[in-house]
Length: 202
Image 1: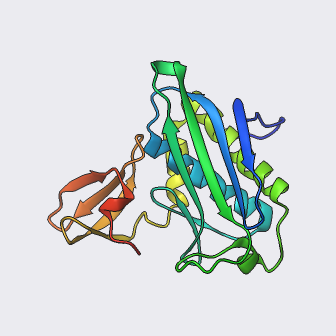
Image 2 (image 1 turned 45 degrees about the horizontal axis):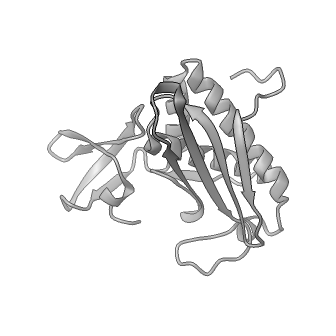
């Protein structure tokens, strides 16, 4: 997307929860028919992109709603959509980024990754900037390009995953416009996953 003008902001309300150990916020914006699964993925991607732009550290989206650095979770996103019809629905996107030390197994923090404490206000600005551009791109019909962009930063794509219920391995192929993870089983058939609970934890 061209950025030759001031970027638009998320058209809605942003609520920031102040805390020492993490950056937590919820952004509210109008949405159409997007699913909470897709919106949570978009929020996670924006958090990942914001982290990269603010710190220079490469982070990856772990489908459906986590951000990882060196295989450890540094941020998590979620989304819910209020009842309504068409553009009358409201999307609530929540993001939590670990800023300081964490003792949670399988997790890390930006402090541990960067070595210094980051400016939370600047990080918030970078994440919201990414969210705004994703919102504008989606609203103007750039769905395929945005999904390709998300997929390119999703570590799950192209890897082998294990399906819980089937106890079978599958190749993660891509993400559809509902946010579902498309996988190919060993017998060649394809299925679409709608929840991270369908995968064995990594």
